[in-house]
Length: 251
Ligand code: PGA
View (cartoon, rainbow, N blue to C red):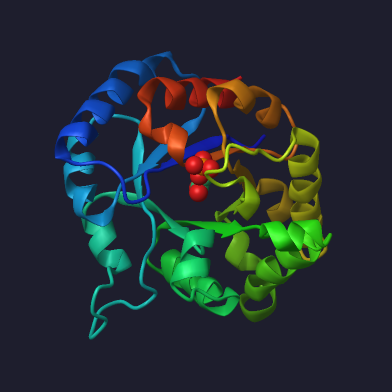
């Protein structure tokens, strides 16, 4: 049995005041949430504060990005050692916003997955097709290329303990969600792709869904056999919504 994971990607949102309020409400509500791993990904600067606030909580903290380098002349970047020092457990890699706006290629994302694992953190590798790719019927081709970038260069072992997030770009922040059936079919495609190399790893790997996940659609998505939780953007900024999504994943 794979333990579900719900991760809240706060993106570049919030301030000290709003983050305090959000975290306090999450801490109050998390006891009513069953068997599920829960994590939040604040902007870098707020990570120390959020890990401090969540010190005795089961809610883990992650980063939205990470440099693959250990240290050195990389202006504006943050290393895995730094994230670990401040209690991070996860790092999102290859989010579509980083692929679209910051030149993060399949190859760069793959190298970062390696870097994250080397630092002892858990990568959440995002894959997913754009609207145009979706409309051209190229969903599986794109997702295959993104997964294969890791598989072909670094091998299936890289997926041991790694989380994959399928996030169709056309569903991110748009209010449009892939139907549970569409998402399930892509998730099972990804799992099959890994199974061709190593069945045990394919069965263990958590594949979570992202793209307009809300309290109202979470249960139907998470009921699918290959959907092991969610990567939640907008709805993770609302404690009640986020906790409801976590509850749905636990059921
Ligand atoms: P959304 O974002 O839930 O706001 O669609 C998801 C994501 O980008 O991870």
